[in-house]
Picture: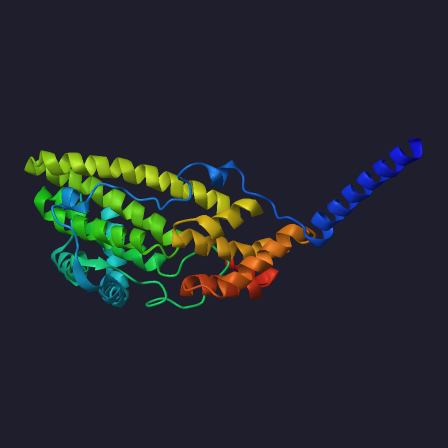
Length: 326
């Protein structure tokens, strides 16, 4: 009886050992996600729900690609970047200054180039007007160009406010608001989505003053609601940025974002982060195997951005990552 029980116990222990070896050596399991990415709604597309028609009085529905209009405005800005930089610095230095007539005409010329974009429903800028290679970094090509446009539009808004011409500030505010809306909706890179939200917030607050001045209570209420929703969406966006682009991201959360996030921009960011994880997770067989699977899957994606992210994550060196993230 005792010998028989001993054999049974030995068999159980042997089976357990074999199972352990199978799961840790032959079929190692990757880290699972934490509550940071399993909370309800965290993998949803974050954006305000209030219709633009209620906020602006219209909604862009025209055909064509607004990205082409932004590219033309960016080219114009770059041709006159010294003048635009000087006017911005003058307004910043002197809180009572307004734009001189030549500066005002130049800023209005840029606003005119942006006007067609405000009528178009969609925008594709990334990989059309930017390089088609990515880096393992949160930096996004094109972000600085849009920041330059926003500064000019802010100069125009500030000029009209200081000149007590509140209704005139509506045009540059609307242009900036819709530029941010287009960037947010492109869902190409986190940095562009986040800056798009920030442009909408700044322009929306300028439009609040326009609506107050005009006594438009309906638009005022709609914009206040939109900005509250935008603030919430921006907070969740920045929370996810800290998950993906932290110094030492949790692999399980990155895997979960790549496979399940509804926002293409975050699937791109997560895939790029694999380039760093492949070095940091050496020795973690389950995680390394998952990284290899996800990189292989990225090359079969229908999305050019995902394929580009997977390619640079697969081929990059540790030295390149260090340079890119400085």
